[in-house]
Image 1 (cartoon, rainbow, N blue to C red):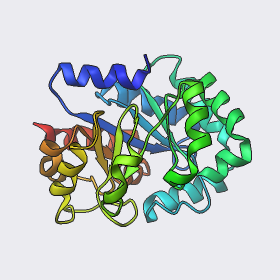
Image 2: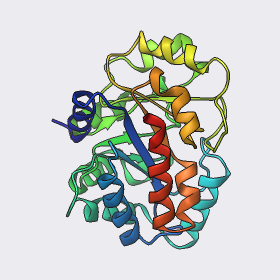
Image 3: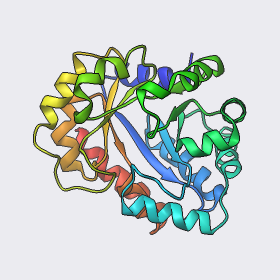
Image 4: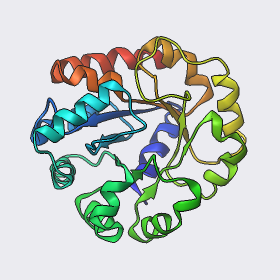
Length: 258
């Protein structure tokens, strides 16, 4: 069984909610420091950890993650370094790891080669935000063969297509909370609850919400409408302040589940 399924099953058994932090490699943390942070996030009760592969034109991401990617690329971070980070994590942790990557990176590497190396190093899932439903056929097939889950993203603008996008979904569904890019927000857009209820009727795997989850107040606002939250920009921002700042923020954020 994929580690993602095992982890979500534990959350369900404990009648809890999933917590999925997003981290970047090579910007403010070295690869080794990032791996150490991921292991610590596992100890803090993370259900899955998402790692972003640095890219020069991250169209789904806001300023915080864009800046982190730029810094990481300027520091010379490569795809192989992200895979090495996962390999280091696997020496002491079985926390599920999902790679968030733009398709140019996958295509340049070669889809089969990319997935082979990802699987070999212990990657459990893949998020590719710039591959639309109509063009994901080959990627979906090869992910299936490699044992890596291709995590679908849905947004409120996807409403007429949600059923098709999430058909045969595995792992979890990533629900985008707004129509913009990633970034911290003090509250979510109106209609978020109705949107999540609509997705709930169409999927039979866990559904987690991301984009704008940045405080325990926002977590409290959505926790009854989803199976978990994904937190990116707010964590990446605190990575610039050090590991302790990230861990303290995560502890405070998770109070929103109580």
